[in-house]
Image 1 (cartoon, rainbow, N blue to C red):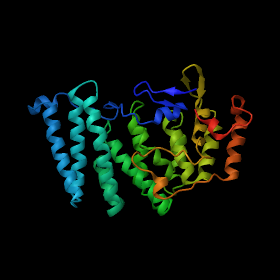
Image 2: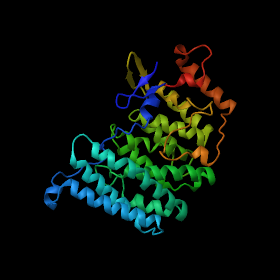
Image 3: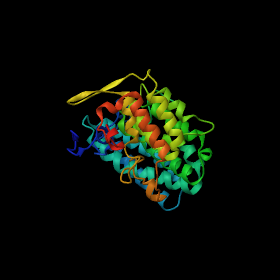
Image 4: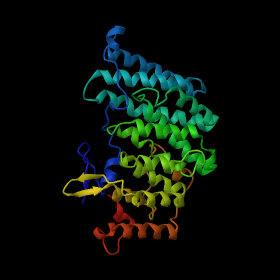
Length: 331
């Protein structure tokens, strides 16, 4: 059955595709960051005045960066935080926040990506240090934007160099964001899915981290595992088997007009697009890694058989057609 977004009206084949679509009906995610409502009073200016001033400065800094002033980037990220903070105070509907977040989310993440491609990881690592997601009780509002740039370069490094070349700090950052972000911080959670490309890193066990939080964070773990298949399908299927066979992962979630779905069954959604060439993970936003590298992923026959055997072993094939395909594993 089709699933329709209550906000934008778009229809999707599976619940997962519905969850991950980008309808831009996003408002300030209170679990991602909050603002001191007394701040504007103490400064003697309204939130709108502060926002307008910060937007003007942000535009100036981004223009300076485009003109070659690389030092302007740190200021732009900090100013974007100020813009979002002021926008959060203006109203309760989130309209102002959305109007500020989405255009600058793309512009700032593009700038961070460009700087990292030019100067290397040290540029992005300094931004990570300045906006540590674990330093306070709440995440900085610019967290999804930084995570987007980290995800892009994590994928690029894995494809063009090796998993060992990925800085541990980048993996720690994305994992820290995933752990700290609340359940309602959908945009932030989505931007960390590229963490799966770090699977097999010798100094940071992505597999262990994902397994440890599967019971509490299934809606982040499953799409992250999907990414992992494109990075190293053999390590990814090892992890998938371990997760699906782990009976301690015993949660379920409800679905409209259908039976509740076990978390372990939902994990198999990660295989939805592995046998097709018309479906790729949609995160990070604004980045088509399979086009950049002309990627032609092919699922190994032995990996496919292991997934099929796993489905039958756990009994999840009972509700599938006799001639089921990986598309039927979509939720």
